[in-house]
Every structure is written in C-alpha cells, then in structure tokens.
Length: 452
Image (cartoon, rainbow, N blue to C red; front, side, top):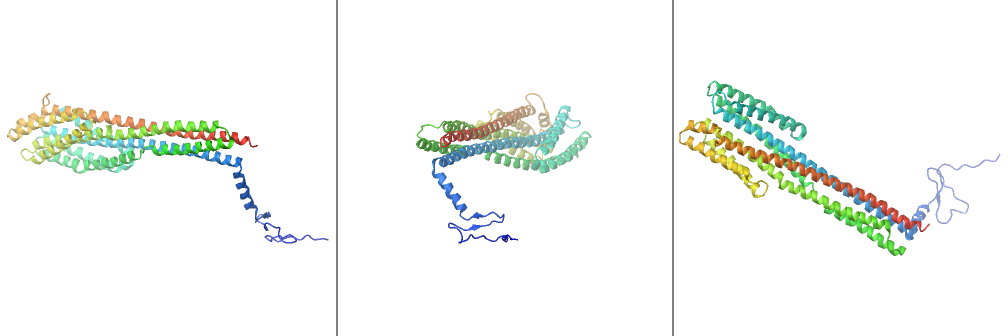
C-alpha cells in the first residue's frame, strides 16, 4: 500500500527547484497558501487604477460626496449647539428673574409689615392681606424654582426654612403690638435681621450663580462665520471637480455637480444668514430686554428695602439715623440703575421719575420727624390718600413691576424665537448636504458609465 506523506502543520512547502521567482510561498494559520508578493501587487494595481480616468473619477466622486456630507453634518451641529445655548439662556434667565421675584416679594412683604406696625394696634386689613399675598407668592415660587434647577435647590431650600422662622417672628411682633407691648418692635427687628442677614444674601448668591450661567449661555451663541468658511471649502471642492471633469470629458457642464453646487451655495448662504441673525438677536436681548429686566427688578428690590428703612426710622423714634442712611444708599443705587437703563434706551424713564417722586415725598416725612413732629410724621407715613408718600410708592411699584413683566416676557420670546431660527438653519444645512452628496454621486456616476 502506498502512503501519502502529510506535511506537518506550519511547515513551508518548497517546490522542486526552489521557490518560484518573485517571492516565496507562505502558509498562514488558516492553511491557505498565499504568495508573499500578493499585497504589493494589489497596491500596484490600485495605483494603476487611480492613474486611469475611471479611478480618478471615483476619487473625485468620493471627495465631492464627503465635502457635501461634511458641510451638512457640521452645519447641523452648529445649528444644534446654537439652539441649545439659546434655549439654556432662556431657561436660566427665567430662573434668575424668578429668584429676583422671590427677593422682591420678601422685601416688599417686610416693608408692608413694617409700615403696618406704625399704625399700632390692629393693622389695616388691606396691608395684612398684601403681606399674606406676598409671603404666599414667595413660598410658592421658592418651591417651583427649587424643583426646576438642582444647582439652586440647596440655597433656596434654606431660604424656605428661614421664611418659616421669619413669618413666626412677624406674627409675634403683631401679637405684642396689638396688646400695646413695646417688645413687639424687638420681634420685628429680629425678623428683619433674619431677612437681611440670612435670606437675602442667600438669594443674592443664587442670583449671581444664575447670572454666571446666563452669561455662559450667551457666550455659547457664536456667530456662523465658520459655517460659511466650511461652505466655501465644500463649494471649492465641487467647483474644482467640475473644472477637472470638463477638461477630462470635454463637456462644459456636469448637471449633477452643478445642481449640487447651487444647492450648497443657496442653502449655505441662507443658513449662514439665519445663524448670524440668531446670534445677533441673542446679543440684542442680552443688552436690551434682559438688561432692562435686571435693572427694573433690582431697583424695585432696593426701593422696597428703603421702604422698610423709612418705617424703621420712625419706629426707633430718634435713634433711626442708621436706617435713614440705609434708605439714602438704597434709593441712590436704585435711581442709578434706572437712569443707566434709560440712558441705554432699555427703559423709558417712567419708573425713574416715579422713584424720584416717592423719594421727594419721603423727604417730607423726614422733615416732620426731624422737627420733632413725630406724630405728624407717622400720620403722613401711614396715609393712603392720592397725594401721600404711600400712593407715590405704589405708583413706583406698579411701574417697576410692569417693566419687569414686559421685558422678562420679551427676553423669553426673543430667545425662544432665536433658538427656533438656529434649529431651522441646522436642519436646512443637513438636508442640503445630503441632497448635494446624492447629486454629486449621480453626476460623476453618469460619467463613469461611459467607461464601461
């Protein structure tokens, strides 16, 4: 019987006469015998193919398709990033304004409680109702804002806890005041101290954090010049391809590439304009209604703080000079903010004029008190007739709240509109990139068919 020799695994088989010219044979682990020069031969064939017209056409097609797709993807990414930044700016600005509203409500509630304390005995029902309304408003807004932004939750939760302590002290002050006990002013002073030394600083810290986030959001809204640059690069690739194709095929126009170029040109210009408009709108909002909202809100808070100081100067009866100094500092700061906003064209000056009118009426209270006519000063400070200081303060408050509401709504609406514009631009660029890639592929493929 004849036995067939079996080659051991991994052993090289060498034909009689030695290895064939051009390279030895090797046995890969799978057992197949592959010439060592096969890879270099494949590379040589690929290079040879690229030297011929069909190979060059395939390379041109790949470049055109990739350029169109790159523009579409980059444009979509630019639109998405800008849209998200604008949406975040809108949300964070609303959060900041909401925290300012809580601060304003608390300071206004304190001013109302302090002013009512001057009356003695049972405070007027309308002032009590106003105080309760402001406290409820602050408590509800604190709960809402704590749930809408985790970054602010801890500080806002502490303010909510302090609010419970504050309202308890105010109730004690009211109870003792109704009984005619002078210790009531001490409870009121303690409540006001908690507000100004614990609650307001915490809220101010939240406002600063929110303002930093809003600034970062606005900074994320970049202009669209780099999208235009990417579009020009893609157009350059398509135009160069058309010129080369015209010379190679002796045809003036390739319909597919020409239409792809037109699509990218038109949509690229339109989308660049849209993205630039969204960026410009964000800048206008930041320096316009957003700045006006902050100015009016801060002035309103400062004025309410000054209103409390006005009452404390009378409650302390001769030892309230420190409170009067605080009144002057707060009203000067409020006036400066309103005047700056008016000078920049963000506010019309109505609120600033109302503030000046109230400060002028406050001077009448101080003149009576400084002249030793304390009872007359208290009577003027608690009066509610149309010419009273309280009526002047109410006019200022109404003007300030109207400014806050109007410009806060404008801020939200314009930022949301800009975000929508950026989103549309991104989708347009993506669609244009896909369509242009398909058109370029079809245009070059038509020329390839001629070589088959």
